[in-house]
Length: 569
View 1 (cartoon, rainbow, N blue to C red):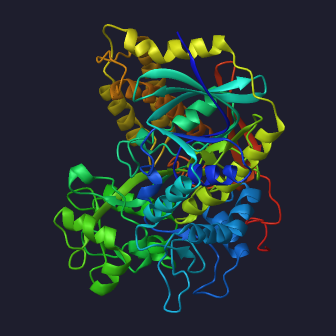
View 2 (view 1 turned 90 degrees about the vertical axis):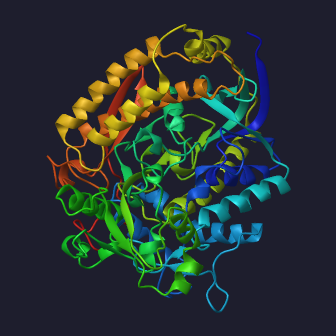
View 3 (view 1 turned 180 degrees about the vertical axis):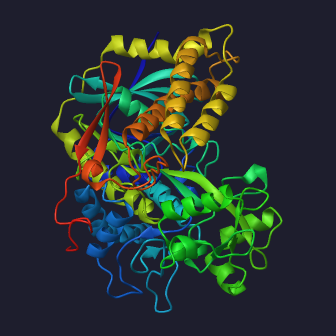
């Protein structure tokens, strides 16, 4: 194999909100920066984020502060959060939203010209900054324009397959250039992993097709620590019909603007589950409430409930929710006059790569930011915290990576390891017959939805683990790609994605089996309450000698004590 090596100082894997912000930060220290992305620039999942960006600007509610933002985030996260990361998020989110404005971003405004803020679930004050219901679109467009202005190098349609190490230091990544089919190495002194989430491990999801969890898998296989992989958020409101659109996001902004949830009998059922917060309860609670209504026979014939905003003045809907209005008009429903049918949908991974406040991992030179990171959101993410997370930790990761790259010599590459990785990724192409990737993917997604979804129980989880283990054996030995050409072979890329998905699914399921309580988005029907004595703890996962090792570590409590310990800030 003739090996092409691309050299750079700082490599960013992923071009969503976190990756783009990391590249901008890294470029400020005059380092050679390269971004690689599986999609075309500007098409990352960030563009699909609708509702907003949390920052304690106090533009509408003068009493809001970063300290209250911290408390809201910890309460929502069931105190599984890394408190140092949450403080960093809340303190720096305002500066990063002003960065976006300075880059040219346009947000919705109050009558006196300040950034408008709307209420989102589980938040004390109106804190969510937004650009209509296209906030992610505005954010990513702003960042990609800034990348071009700075002439930062971007290679798109590239699939990263593994992290390379030089002993205890990162050395780069192996990649497949989808356009040519060539296997290459990017050597880098620092790497920022910003590869996004894993919603596609489930049958119904808001996530883009690319979100199969490759960042988690790549990190795991390289010996990087991950945290709380059982904590996966199911958004309460995804499109229910038509089937072709099932799972598509219906932004929390609909409920933030006053939308109400009704069962098939016309009952506003959140009164039963949380009469204080109602539709703006935590996402985990609203999702379980909707799922319960459906399971107990009070859902619609389409396995859904109603979300109604038709009583809100049409002008407000048109101004503040234009995407929702257009999306539903496309499928023949006018939300100004009739209710939507919605159902829970897989949305966001709260677990992920373990980092510190400098975005460092346990491998020197490797940093991480965005949804691929765990610890920021704990057991349940507040709507609006994800976009803030991408900007805060993207900036930190890029800056840290650039400083590190300046201080070290270029890493050495291990050709034997590279050859082994080439053999792994080429295997599906070399087989003359074998398993069909789409069928295997579909079976895995259905298994995860049925056995490791919103409601979990030991037997189902163990059944899921057994399925994953057996499927892995089959896939490694028999997965086959029919199209033997390498150029633009999406079937080949899809087969490699399945390997990554299996790693993510196993991490999630093993962690879910281990956590014998209900906390945050992880709900065990056989352990329906939180066990604060035994399980105010994180689950750390690491690959040791090709074995998946899980370790329970107590959550570090600083001044932010849980309410069952103390009510003091």
